[in-house]
Amino acid sequence: MKRPEGSLISYFSNRVKKEGGINLAQGTPGFPPPGELLRLLKINAGEKSLHQYAPGIGNFELLELIRQRFSSTVTPIEADNLLILQGATEGIFLTFFYLTTFLEPPFAALSFDPVYESYPQLADMFHIPFEYFDFEGNLEVDFDKLEKTIKEKNVKIVFIASPGNPLGKTWTRSEMSQMIALSRRYGFYILFDAVYKDIYFYEAPCNPLAFNEEKLFYIDSFSKMLSITGWRIGYIITAKGHMNKIRVMHDYVGLCAPSILQEVTARYLSAHEYGKNYIDTVRSKCKQSFAYMKKKLELLEFKVADSGGGYFLWARLPGKRKIWKDAFEFALSLYQEKQISVVPGENFSNTKADYVRMNIGTELPIIKDAAARLKDFFTNR
Image (cartoon, rainbow, N blue to C red):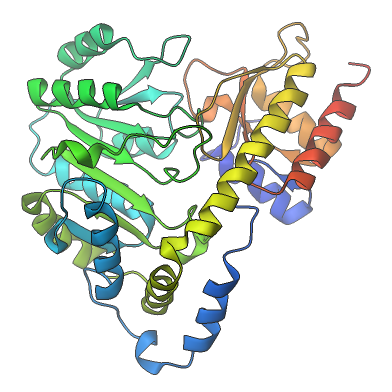
């Protein structure tokens, strides 16, 4: 069939939503939000003032909770460094848009292959060249090669996600230190996507705010942390000079995040140690689901990438079974026969058409069901 236009994540996840099946395509949490959070939502639904506009910069209590949270672990953060907005997606867009208002063309943007789909799409919207930079085989960065690329392509914007999507790469303090050093040497800006920071399998990823770098934009949300992707509450942390201008843009683009949802999130975090018990449980479940699916796929001769965290498993199709032209045909056949949706690697890379991404951010029984269907799918092939 003809390739659908637009996001393959949307294509395959929408098929499940319309026709049924197991959705391993979209990064939607398979866990209910914290029960106490939902209880607070019910209790506060009758407060009339919470159904009107929130302050443009964000709910003041929530801003203070975020400020305290980060100030306790990194360089002190002030209220003027913060902005709450409509999800990390708005944060990424606003930051990118802001940078294009003063960076002198021609310049390029760069991220690490495979790449979350929003990054190259943003560059394309603004007619900016985009560079895909490969990790080495052990998911390490060849910084000499990276420096050469940055210099030759005049890279001025670098996207980093940790843990990454779809690969699950987590950046160490040493790696971030080298990235910051390159940023200072060549004057590029770093958009750090931290939405999966709480879903790590071994060690917590390095928090780059500790470097106190003016060219860093730290973008995060509560979507995956509390399994509330539909609430659209994200935030940016950056230097005051940048933040002043981004806040003005936000006034004319997003205006404010939903008032009542910010309020109940703040009340929940305040009363429950910033969601610690819930986050610990979700992290443990994701690690368990990843390990289970990895083992089952490797028995089917998939080559599964190591992951330090996040919601996803990134795997290469079995090399000995050249049944499908590429991962798109595989994903199409898998859904048609077994009603499991996954995302072809071409959605994240120009060179990895024989890879797939699977969402493991769900309960283990669902993962076991999907693994059993996959095994049946390969039987007699």
